Length: 395
Ligand code: HEM
Image (tube, rainbow, N blue to C red; front, side):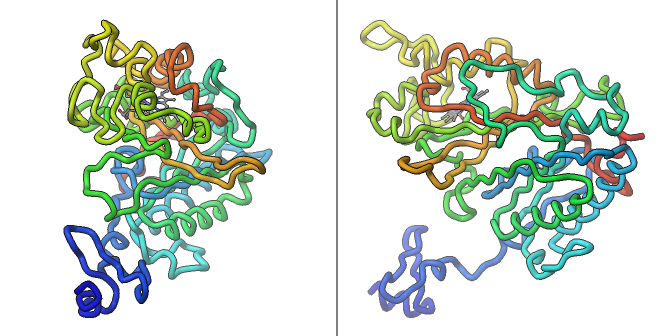
């Protein structure tokens, strides 16, 4: 029956209960996908008060590229660079080639591409804008858990390029890095991924490579925009701006393997299957941090990640928009995986640092996770009609 069905569908696949069944002997699994390129054609609006790629529903693939400025980079160079980048980002996000695009065909699949630009502290200095730099724009304080490597730390400029197709991400990164080549050198590139489009029901929270449902309790920025976006009293230069923290956090999956399921769930305070808190049954149930088990101890323990990662001060929240990474292991190791842990917040010092400090003091997850990279960027407001990205900051 299956083979007959598959033959009717072009020898490739038969959809049963929402899942494609592939005849392994004859079919290429890639053919199992419906011949529908809607995901590839989807676009995100480029223009607006705020840059895209922050509150955009996370795409499947991301590349973070940190660039260092060449000596002599000044305000004029920044304006020139931002004009070129704005123009190319707008074209690419619309599914059209960049101005000097040598692989024009690769631009035809926008796949919800977003390009988000960020500035490290040196941009403000080089452009003579030091007096406009927010106080939090500097490296994070040193934390006891940190084992930071230069290879993943710092950077003068950042590009966050996200799309539901990895070819699209690669092409956009190459074009934008080429645009900047007379002004910058590449410092680091971090690539990340989530579930591919169409593989999980829409609205499903992603899983990280420890197997956990990751991203459940993220603020709804539509309801609480002030958690992410600059407030009016920051002045017109900062309108629509935010900040991006990029921490590369390695997971020791080999020692995580030694922990049983119960231990894994207690480390976070949530179940692995549903992502529900240990005191609830559904993913979005509110955790009961006071509930006690038969042994008189709190069900969600004092060291559990979700207890430590929340503060009584509700202002100390931010938007998490991280990606998994999975690189080639070092000799003798089985894996080299973790999170490109990325957050957006209005004020790094007021929101991010207190939580990272709490986790540094106490968090069971620290047993298996190690921050190996860290960078902080200012994300200027978006390009409104006729503007380039960052224009209001420079005026
Ligand atoms: C929650 C994993 C690092 C902040 C969670 C949850 C998981 C998780 C599974 C529960 C589901 C959810 O609400 O998303 C991890 C892993 C990490 C990591 C695997 C490192 C590899 C961090 C860091 C921070 C952080 C470095 C902040 C500096 C949070 C916050 C929550 C959370 C704020 C929501 C807590 C709540 O209000 O319930 N994390 N996390 N996490 N994590 Fe992490």
